[in-house]
Amino acid sequence: MHPVFLLAAAIGLLGIVLLLFAAWGRRVRGLGAGETVALDNVTLVSSKHRLVGRPDRVVKQGDALIPEEWKSARRVSHGHRLQLGTYFILIEAEYGLRPPHGVIVLGDGSRVTVANTEALRAEVLATAAKIRAQRRHLMSPVPVDQPKAKCGACGQRGNCTQAKA
Image (cartoon, rainbow, N blue to C red; front, side):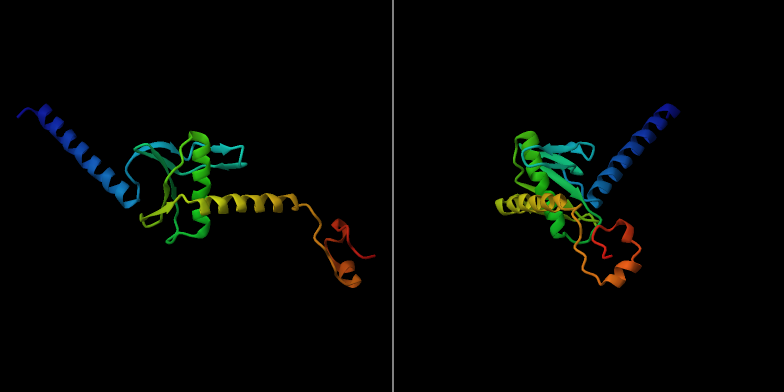
């Protein structure tokens, strides 16, 4: 057999091995099937809801767009669900399609599906409103009610508008 054919066969075999290794790696890391529409380089914005976010991956499955969020955690937290709920709102605003669900991929590669419900949507919007309300008060002075002696010894006395004489 000619050496060129042997080289071509070896390269072909290496290609097959690499494809199998890539498929195994996707499965171990919890990457789902479907065409990737966006990775974390796409920032989604909803002016109406005053939300901004960047999902780790948006996958097209049939006519649906499914956000995926990759977490190193072992369990899904409430905050993870709220984050995915935010992406539901953003995808709907950006693409005009409401995702039926999203996926949180945990550190061990397991995939947890989160349904896009009205209750989750309402909680996301209420939480965002609370955050905005708290931000309006960030620069408000913290009420201080300390004895005069403590004010005199305080290292922040020069910065405090409430220091007692």
